[in-house]
Image (tube, rainbow, N blue to C red; front, side, top):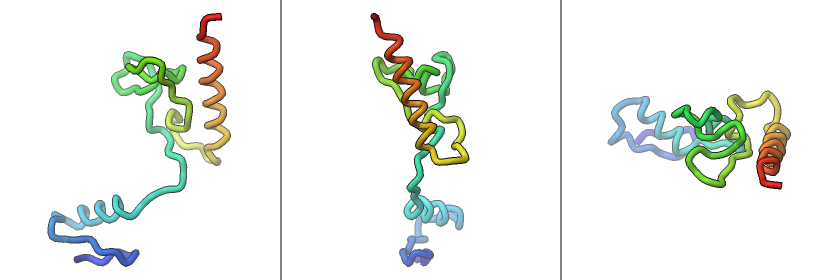
Length: 101
């Protein structure tokens, strides 16, 4: 057993290298209280790597939109709250304007 800094132990029996041990420790013990950004690539529907269109529509799923920090290509230098609100407001406006009058 290899002792971890937080007092927990990680078995080294199945680990192939120190990198494996470090990865196991990180996956088991590291978390965040911050909002993830950039997890859903925004782009054209023909882009195989895009998850959401520039209007917030999830590609391949009817009626589902994404309007949060996951569409930011990079994390902001400030708190993500206000930019996320702005994204939500913009996507809501796009959805409302696309509805039949």
